[in-house]
Image 1 (cartoon, rainbow, N blue to C red):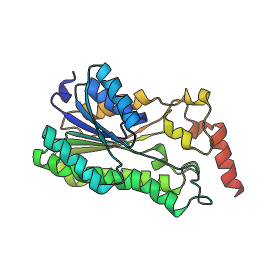
Image 2: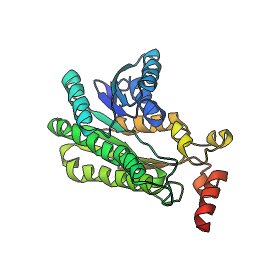
Image 3: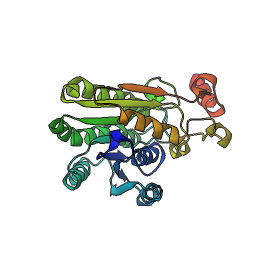
Amino acid sequence: MTAAFAGKVAWVTGGGTGIGRAGARALAEGGCRVVISGRSEATLAETARLIRDAGGTVEIRKLDVADKKAVARVATAIEKKHGHIDILVNSAGTNIPDRRWSQVTVEGWESVVRTNLDGMFYCCHAVLSGMRRRRDGVVINISSWLGKFVTPLAGPSYAASKFGAAALTETINAEDGLQGIRACVICPAEVATPILNRRPIVPPKAEQERMLQEEDLGRTIAFVAAMPARACINEIIISPTYNRFYFGGREIDQVKSTARKK
């Protein structure tokens, strides 16, 4: 057990797969009592099994973060049962295949922004009052390389929501750092997670193996959460050493080439 996590309760959204699953596992390995939320009971159950098999403590609260009333209910239930939420990891996120301006629909835009930005706000809003009362707490919001640098690969809804996530995160530090609350936005470049399957062109397996892996982000989340209360890591930008946003990749180049032709 990591001393920094003794007695801590962590709530991880998007905990069924990808970065959320890795973050939940890393926090549980460090000794946190972890609550995982997501929309899929099957993936949440698999994450819970992995954590329990490794000796960790976990419970499941099924949730669609785009539902603000459900978010408030889940946060209240966690605090009622455990007394506090010390660490919030907002990892729930999505994108759509038809994401370009020439393809995206109003409904597609709304589905991405409701999850990636509105849902993040709802979860932060639900935990901050309790953190203020205790004058302690860590919020970790997962954004993206595409929330720092604009490329045609993201699409307007994903880019806008991920840029917004960074701004939202820093407003917490600006207002609530005085209350002992620390917020960090993590902006990873390509990570080999299931969301890649929603790209118009799915990267080949050999390329995915060169990307960041889920466990790399799990270690990053645990590192941020374990920092002493005096230290706030405002932002982390992390990329694969072989960063295709610099060097190119078949489907990235194809998307950019198509954009130039239009």
